[in-house]
Structure formats: C-alpha cells, structure tokens
Image (cartoon, rainbow, N blue to C red; front, top):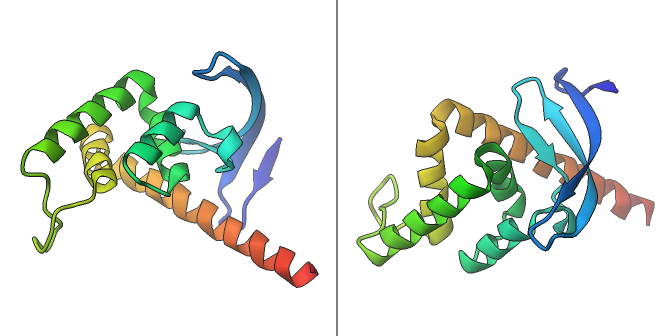
Length: 147
C-alpha cells in the first residue's frame, strides 16, 4: 500500500516475519521510505533483542534510533561497532564537538556508526528518527485529549 505522509514522502508498508536472536519468529510491520532506510515501530517488543541489550549496556534510551542503525548496517557490523565503542571507551574516549567533555558510550557508538554509513546516510537515519518521535508525541497528545 502506498501512503502519502504529511511531508509528501511516499512510503511502502509491508508486513514480514522475522527471526529474532531468541529464535522466536515474530511479525513486524515496517515502512520503507524512498531513501531505502526501513523504519520499525519503536515499541519495545518490536525492537530486536540485540538492540535492546546494546541500549541497556550503553545506558541509552533512544532505542528507535539504534534500531534504525541496526537495520541499516546489520547484526555483524552492529556487533563490531559495539566492540569498537568499548575499545574507545577504555582509551581516551571521544570529545564532544566543543571539547568540553567526553561523549557518552551511546554517543561514541553513534559517532562510529556515522563514520561507517557516511554523514549523508546517517543524516537520513536521524531524520527518520525525528519524524517518528514527532509522530509518537502527536499520538500521545491526541490520546491525552481523548481521555
């Protein structure tokens, strides 16, 4: 089914069955935008256990962003980035742009992910994440108004 979003971006919705790391199959509805980056609902039970584990390990709350990165680079590269993040954290870490402090472990992971996929592609991923956050905020606001 083709749907026009408020931003006039055409998306394709599809339902697929995927195997999770726990070896349980589940059905997930995904949206694929014109730029080829798939998005998945950020509900915890629909985000891969591997992503949830990583987010807990890195004390990161933005599971949706990490799931978008996971979908873009795949499980193997995702694990490699986690290991590289641990190495960087054991060393000097990475400073923020203004140099005032070290990045959080999640920030280091995303910095490495940006280097891996390229700034342009990472920007698309971040834009999709922002759109999803806005959509969820709007839904939450509508639900509050209904109650």
